[in-house]
Every structure is written in structure tokens, then in C-alpha cells.
Image 1 (cartoon, rainbow, N blue to C red):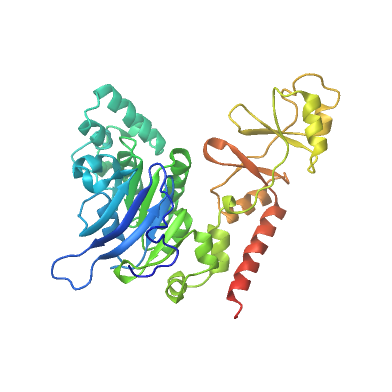
Image 2: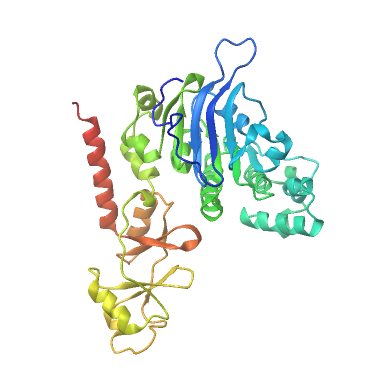
Length: 397
């Protein structure tokens, strides 16, 4: 096997986890061609991650995707999808359990939106009531009102709406994994950006394993939990997080592919989840006021954050809010500012912090669960640390 940077070598792979995908020494050769389209690739895609395959035409990224759901068969190697040997399964059955989204949505023009979205559940012989409920649920999930859109035909939709229907169809039977082959490539920049944001919101809620193909470096940096930068012949030049790729390109090819502007891209594409968050004492509405006051006094911040029964932040509690109170703290305290999401970029977080009156803002993950807090100082220190690390790596030895 050829040497790759940051890909998992055979024998040292970390487990893919639930819903993950593994390619093990996968090769695809076409008759009459001297070089393989995919050459001995080994890669682990962890469950619940968005992994972007990024590279120029001819780098094998779409071929790798089609190998995963067996639209084409590998010449050699092994493919594991959600813990099952994909090559040992019936191809049609395999595809029904992998969502697939392509450019221009690929909807059937003679079918309504509801019929398109319900195709896979229908193939799996769900009853009509269950299919109808699932269709409405998915349309709501992709921000399309079922009453308004379920009976329309694809020609009556905009390009962005068609892509949303395509995503809903791919989620039809709640597959553990989704494959997305340049799904937003044909759309205008504004629609494309909106759909990228929608995909990130969906992923935060659903936590699917997503393999996303693109040739757009900014799209890859925005969407990917990890990015595989491919060279000709499917060489994995680097397989790492966006921040790692921006701070430490593996080789000259990756540097050229990035094309400069790494400092600004760190701000645009590094996520709040990438920086150390500050924690504060925690409380709940039913906690005893005297105990909450002890937690505040025992901390260094001077106040506590109050969480609801689903661990979502609702209020700040200061010592004066619980002074002299007996029993539960109840609704005492000051409402928190609208939280920042862990998937937000540092640029989005900075804009939020500048525009609000609160110094401290909670950070939430999937389903609004509290993760920590940030301040302007938190982000300034994180950005300084990134710049220092980048400067250190650029310094000649």
C-alpha cells in the first residue's frame, strides 16, 4: 500500500463505531485502463461524523462513494457499513439502508413530492399510514410545510427545494449512513450556503454518518468533521479535521490545494466545539437555594447556570438571587442570552458576542444540551493560540 498522511494504516485502524464505514485495502480497476481508479485505499469513517472527500476530477472521490453502496463493485478489498460486510449483502438491500443524495436531487418528475420521499419505505413494505406520517415528518425536518409541498411535483419546486426533498428521500427509512455526491454543486451561492446550514442543523439533530463529495475547499471546511484530501489515483494526501489541515498541511500538494488565506479560514471554518469552553457551577430549578449559593461561592466565576430537565440553559443565578431563599431556587435569576451552538464557526460566535449585552453566553450541542460557556476573551485566546501554533509550524527548523 502506498504511504498516506493521516489516513489509518491497515492494522492500526480505530473502530468506526455504530453506523461507521470502513474501507480496507479497496481497489477498483477498469478494463483497458493502466492505472486503477481507486488504489488500495484504507480509511475509517467514524459513526456520526461528516467526512468530506475532497479532490480534483480524477481523484477517485465519486468512485469511492459508489463503491460504498455497490453501485460499482470493487476489484479487491473489504467494505464495512454499520458493522456489516457490504460485499456479503444483497446490493439492493444494502442501498435501501444507505441514503443517497446527488446533484440536482434526482427526483422522479412524474411522482409527487410525497411519493418521492416515501419510495424507500414503500419498497420496505411499510403500511400507508406509517409512510404518510414519515413523509410529513421528513418534510418538516427539511423545512418544507407538508400541507404545502407533499402533493406538488418536482417541476413546481425551486432548485433548493428539490434538494431538500432529495435529502428527505435519502432519510426515508432512517438509514445509519448517507452518501452525498456534490448535492449542492449546481445551486447559486446563497441557496448553497442556506442548504449547507440546513445540513449542519439536521446533522446536529440526527447524528448520521455522512460521506460528502465536493471539489470546493470552502464547502469541505464548513461541513466536514474530517476531510480526506485526495490526489490523482485516490492517494489520501491528508485525512484530518479542518483545523488540523489549515494549521498543518501534510505536504506541498495540500498547501497548493488550500490556496492560501489559512488565517482567515481558521476564523471562518473553525468551530466553537474546537476551542476550550469555560464551565460554571450548574443548578436546576428544583435545587435547594442554600446549596446553589455554596456552589457559587465555591467557584471562581461568581454565578451559576440554571439548566432545565433536558439540560438546556435557561437562566443565570447570582448570589443575590438566592440570598435568604429557603427551598428550591425556582424561577429566580436572569434569562440567558440566545445560546451559541457548538457547530457555529468562530466568526459566527464573535458576531453573536459583539451584538448582545451579555458577557457570558452558553454553548449548546445537539438538542440544545448545555456544553459550556464562551466570552470574547475565550475566543480571543483560542484564536491567538491557533495563530501561535501556525507560526510555530511555519518556522524553519
